Length: 184
Ligand code: HEM
Image (cartoon, rainbow, N blue to C red):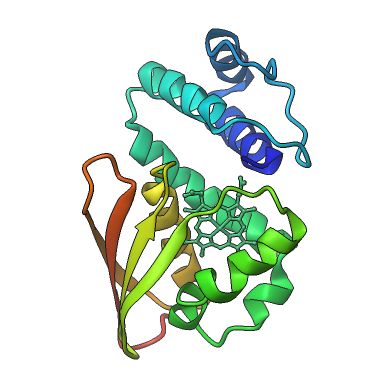
């Protein structure tokens, strides 16, 4: 997993819960890296899982709720660093349906060792998008948060629901229903 995913996560933890919480979860997580992440480094996903588990225990917030909020935060990172990609799409449905065929393809060119999920489009119309998410990391709540912010970015709104096809969250079906009118 890329370092930026760790550095941004710890920055969010600091903003929401304070630097003491950052220090505490790093200490109790027994990390191979020692917790000294750089945005360009690559680290084991198991370290992210330990950090999330320890934060969840201390805050009584579920790992999925933490990941969804983290998805909201991470979209801002995307807005700051990947404007060119976002500008290529006319709207949120267009953008989300291109993650697999274009966006993550570009990400892999920049970071050949990126650990990315796979998305398969099941059904696509103007107002409806059904996608299936596949990843051994089961970060579907992070995807959900990113999708919500994608709609906000393009000044639209949607109802996004999901269903776990596999109990461990490694295969999840998303149904996205776009609202008719852009929000002002
Ligand atoms: C992971 C880039 C849009 C879903 C990642 C990672 C990067 C990235 C760098 C981390 C890879 C690693 O740690 O090895 C981008 C960029 C985007 C974009 C530049 C837009 C311009 C999206 C959107 C979604 C999404 C809109 C929402 C569906 C995910 C998920 C992961 C991920 C769920 C976590 C890994 C996993 O589940 O296996 N992305 N992403 N991405 N991305 Fe994207």
